[in-house]
Length: 268
Image 1 (cartoon, rainbow, N blue to C red):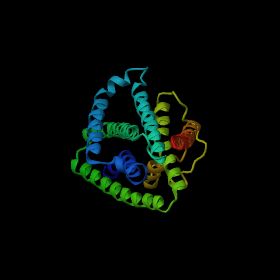
Image 2 (image 1 turned 45 degrees about the horizontal axis):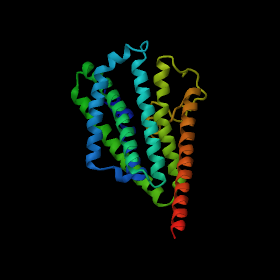
Image 3 (image 1 turned 180 degrees about the horizontal axis):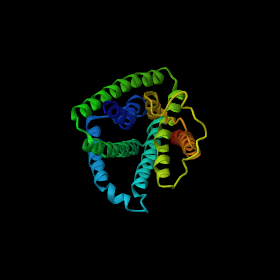
Image 4 (image 1 turned 30 degrees about the vertical axis):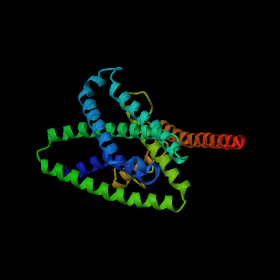
């Protein structure tokens, strides 16, 4: 019971901790403030409770696929919000308000998703468990592991940023975003909206999905030991969209700077 609790908490809450670390370390440190974090937490708690209470209702709609579709919509919303916010921040954050809104939406959607999973799974555990102390201890151990890992990751990302290894941490961020949105493949395959049956390869001999390293790499870069074609397509498409958005935003920023420069010359 203790080990299962630790793995469950790490699986659902570690990606949230990693997302916060990314924002604090590289993406937009100025976004993180006490008021904004509290606002995200309050909206996420309310949203998670609403999703948890309405889960049976969602499941009855769209031929039994309502809950999975709702989660997939949240994942897509989170991905595109974080995508816009990150590429905007990488090019100076000229629209700071929109960047903050993107980060706020992206964080809130992810917290709602993981918070709802947490409530659903733990509601079942609590109903079946006869040892609440083991459950509490598992949560505390997982929280300690997650906090320790997040601190190490923060210093690693800051080191990459301060030593001008921009290309490397941007690639890691693109993989992290892709891993977040690619999780909807597993949801949609449960209701036969996507195919997730045949694996392209099996790297379980190196790192098992269910192992501690598997959960860490899953949270970091969306690692899958047995990815399907659907998973790989969405994963690679998400990475490509990040670099496409980065290219478009860079070109827009360059044109804007050029226009401002021409305007100054004309005024003279």
